[in-house]
Length: 404
Image 1 (cartoon, rainbow, N blue to C red):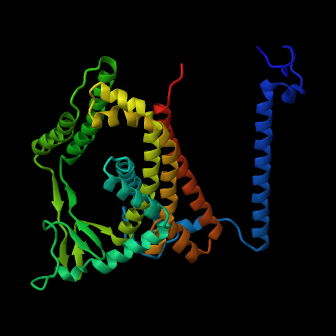
Image 2 (cartoon, one colour):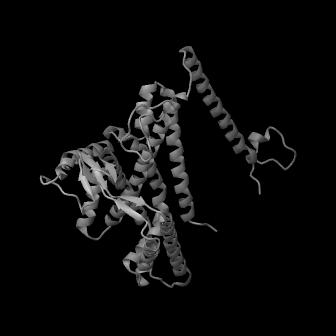
Image 3 (spheres, helix red, strand yellow):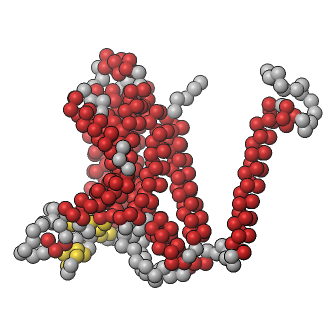
C-alpha cells in the first residue's frame, strides 16, 4: 500500500527525489551531509590560510621530542626523557583509570542510595534524600577541593610512622594512610602466576554463566536454584586450588618506610583519591535518582503479584523489579558515565596528571602547539565517549522490550 504522494510504479525521474516518499528522506540526508562536509572544508581551509599568513603550519612532530617533565602517578614506564607521545599515553591511561574507578564506585553508590531511598524505614530514606540533594546541588569542583584538603590536612605524613616516636601505625602492617596517598601491598608475579590469573577469569565467566542458567531455568520451569553460595564457590574455589597446585606463585610486596617516604607496594596518590571519590559521590547522587525513577516506573501490581506467589522481597527486587527498571535506568546512566569521563579533566586542579594536564597542559605550554594538542584532546574525548555509548547501548538493546 502506497501513500498519496507516491507516484505509480514506473521509470525513475529526478523529480521523484523530492516528490516520492521512498527517496525523499535519502535526498534530504544527502543534502545535509554535503552541507556539513562543505562547512568543515571551509573552516579547515580558513584555518590553514590564516596559519600560513602567520608563518605557522600544523605539525605533529613535537610528539617525538623528549617531554622534559616528570609524572608522579603512572601505569607504564616513563621518565623525563620520554617523548611527548609517551607522556600523552600516560595521561590517557590515567584518565581511563580514574574514569573506570569512578564509574564503578558511582554505580555502587547510586544503586544503593536509589534503592534505600525507597525504603520503608523513614530515617534511611531521609538520609538518602539528604545525600542526593546535598551532593548533586554542589559543583563537583568543590567536592574535589574538599576531599583533597581533608586528605592533606587530616591524614599523617610518612614521618609519623617512623620508629619509636611513631604517632601513626600501618593497618594490618600492610596499609599506610598518609597525606601523600595510600600505600598497599603489590602482587609479585612468579612462574605459573598466569595460570592462576586465567583460572580466576574463567571463574568469573563461570559465575555469570551459572547465574544466567539459574535465571533461565526459573523463567522456563519455575524451579529456583540457589545462586549465592554456588556463585561464591565457583568464584573462589578453582582459583584457590590452582594457586596451591602451582606452588603459590603470587606473592605480596609490602610497603616499607625508608628514608622520608614509603618504598615498595602500590601507591594511590592523594590527587587520584580526591578526583575518584569526588566524581563517585557526585555522580552517584544522579544515578540514585535514575534508579529511584526506574523502580517507581514499574507497576506496583508487579510487586504485589510476586509477593502473592510467595517470593521474598530480595527475590522480588532482583527477579521482577530491577529487570524491568533497567530499561528506564540505562539510557540516563550512559549520560552519567560520559559526564564522569569528561569531568575527569578537572583532575588538573589537584595535580593529577590526566591527559588534559599532560597533553593539554604541560606539553601545550612547552611546545606552543596549541591547535595540534587541542585537536588530539578533542579526538581522544570523542573516541572514548563514543566507545562508552556504543558499549552501554549494546546492553541497552539486549534488555529492551522485544516486540512481536
